[in-house]
Structures are given as structure tokens and as C-alpha cells.
Length: 562
Image (cartoon, rainbow, N blue to C red; front, side):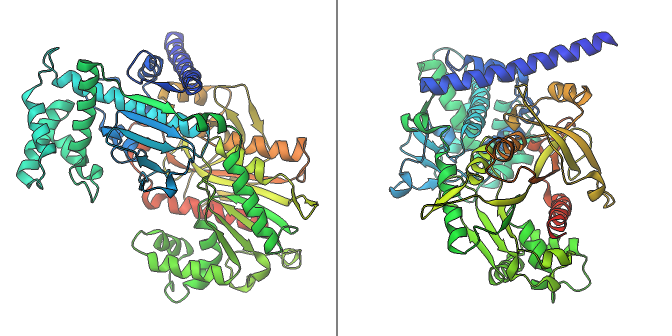
């Protein structure tokens, strides 16, 4: 028994050392200004990632290619990145006003610009977490690319296998592939990747884009081609960090612009001195919880409230969503699309304009007769960006020489997280956030309790949560260690400790908001990284995310209204 325990612990220790090494290395490379991922400078990152073997990257440590991990990463990087030898991380440096067209990855809102055949610029406006995220993804795809070159190179003179020649012909052919030609190409690709024909066929369409139906072939070919260039001609891919990015990072530049713009709009609308409830959530659940029942009353007869939410969430029901948005805008919602580069949109709801009789959430008489509060909903932040945005938002502001402190009454954070005991869609109620890789921990009194959310057919657990430095770096051993340790960890996410650090600083250290501010945190499970086949790379939540999202949202609103 003790032998097994010892082995698990050592593996967990190795893993946590590897994560620490990755972060220290990434910071060092960033300060240095450039590095070659497959050269000597990138060696520590590669070794640490291979030692870690994170769940999300599946078989990265084996000879065969990792397909689900590749899809996860490619969805978060700009189209065409596989063709680029030079990847340049920049700040917001004015490319939006140029002839360059922004390329936005399907699963991450970030602006990227293809400068020429060899160079891709990626704009960083969300701080360090975003850099860690991108560098980890790049390390993964470059390791994968060298697996391809190993399989297709016959000798040091650069001669390649027949499979490679056939793939090259299919990719470079200008005409549309027939079903037959596609299957021939898939057969050669399967050999190159060490996967079966069936495995490649299954994921083929998930990689496809309307503009590039054969995208998987294209990605495999270019990753392999640039890896061959590195091996034969020593023409190494390079990642650079622009001088402006290095100078600006950590200075809350985007967070400050974002926050000042919001306070300016609150001021213009006479809302700056009113009580405020801040909610960090998506841009639909609060609006739908408040306005869907009245906006859709004709089309929602005989439906339960959760069936209505599910209908609105369905991708084909844009007209239902438009109806709710229209109603919300007529009833006092102010929508502030982001222009600061934080990528955090905001909705402001003035409860003075509410018709409480049309809400299907209970509202107490005391609330109806109070100084009508303002409900302030902000989109999710990304990692360290949570500290930057909340820290700036909670600072007092001066208008016409008068200093105004925001009357923040509560701050509610809801979001997705990985769960360690349970499945997709289950709910986690944190009692503390532990910041991975440091000794920092943030206990707090959570206004939401387990009892509040139980009894709806979903499991609810309560305990500490880990704020990780990057979701793509977790592996089973570390998670098992936390799960079995006395920390009583129930899940992992990326923002909690950052939010709580900012809230504690504002309420207890700077006294810029009420020291007794109420906080609420609740997360629903997007994956279970301890279960094979349930990691983030296994795909989204589908409609299983609807119920927990709205349960949490309604409970937050209920507490605000009562």
C-alpha cells in the first residue's frame, strides 16, 4: 500500500516541479524576448510538457499522434499558424487600422494577423495567463510536428517516404478533392500519424472549415514540412515577444481603460452613486433569467422555465434570443461591447426600470422599496486578467474633482471548472481558493450554500478549489494528490484566486468598497480531468450546461432581490 502511495506522490511531485519549471522558463524566455521552441532554448518547456503529459494532450508522450489534443489547440490558435516559421506575440499595436485582416480563432477571442507567408502576429491583451496558454499550445503542436518528421524522413539527405509524397501531392493540388482522393490521402495520413484510417476519418470533419474542407491534411502537411526544415536545414521556428508587449505587461493598461469607460457610462446614466451588484457570468444567463419569461410568453406556453432556457440556448434559435435582447434593451439594459482589448463585454441592468410583476423570480417588498440597485454583469475574465479587471473596477473614480467610491453590495462569480468527483454539469460551491504553485490561499464566506442548489437532479459538492496557472497543464497525478490530500479539493479553474485577491484588497486593505461586501462563487463542471474521455479535449458540454448555468444564475438573482 505505502509503496503505491509513494509512487503516486513522487509522480505528483515530479508533475508539480514540471509545472513550476514551465512557468519559470516561460517568464525567462519572455524577458529574453525570443526563443526557438525546438532549439536549446525551448528544451526545458518540451521536457517539462513530456514529463507532465497533461490529460488534455492525451498521447503527446507516445509515438502516435494525438488527435483530440491537436483539435483542442488548433481551435484556439489562428488559422494558418501551422505554416508560419515566425510567431510574434504583440500588444495591441495598431494592426486593427491596417490592411491586415484579423484572424480570430474559433474558440478564443483574440486578434491575430498574418503578416506574410512566414509570420503570424498574435495580439495579447489578457495578460500573462494568455501568454502561458499560447506557449503551452505551441510547444504541444511543435512536439507533434517532430513526431511527423521522424516518421516520414528516411535519411539525413532529406529523402521522405512514399506516404509523405502522396500527402504533399493531395495538399498542394489546386482542385477540390473527390471522396475517393480524400480517402486515399487519409490512408497515407493515417500511416504518417500512426493512427488508423477510422480514427482519422472520425475527426476529419471536426477540423474542417468552410474555407478549408481538407484542413486536417493541410495542418499535418505543414507541421511536418516545417519540422523537416528544422531537422535537415536547421531552419528553426522562432517565437518572439514584441518590445511594447514586454514593456506593457502587468501594468493593467487594458483593465484601466475598460474600467474607466464603464464608470463613465454609469456616470452619464446617473447610476454611479446607486448600490451595485457585480456578477461575472456569460452574456446571456442573467438577461434571459430576467426577461425570457415575459419576452417569450406566447411561444413558451406549457414549457417549464428550464425548457425555455434550453430552447433559447439552441444554436438555431437566434430569433428567440433577439426577442429577449430587444425586451431587455427596452427595459433598462445598457449593453457595453468591449473596445479596450480586454474582450470583456458588459451589461448594466437598472432595476428601477423593472416591472417586478413580470419576473418569475421572487422579489421581497424591502427590495422593491429600496434604493433601486444596479446589476452589473461582466463577461468571463481569463486567468490573471480577473485580478486586473476587478482591481481596476473597484477603485474609486474622480469626476469633476469629486471622488466617488462605488457602493458595491455583492460580487458573484459563476463559471465553468473541472470537477474531481462527479461529472459534466455538476455544481461546485467553493469555500476557499488555493493558488497553484504558491502558498497563497483565500478562504471566504460564500453566500451560496450547497443547500441552495440541491434537489434539481444535479450533484452539488462543497470544498476548496484550486486556481491553476493554465488549464492545459493538469495531469491525473497532481489532481489525485490534491483530491486525496487534506486540502479537500473539489475542482480546478483559472480565475477564482485572482478575483478574491482583488476583492480582499479592495474591501479589507484599501477600503475602497464596503469591508462586509457579500461574495458568491459557484461553478458547474465542464469536464472531469480524472476520468479518461471526460477531459476538455473530449468536446463541449452541449445542452448539459444549460441547467446548472441557470440554476446558479437564478439563485444569485434571488439572493440579490431578497
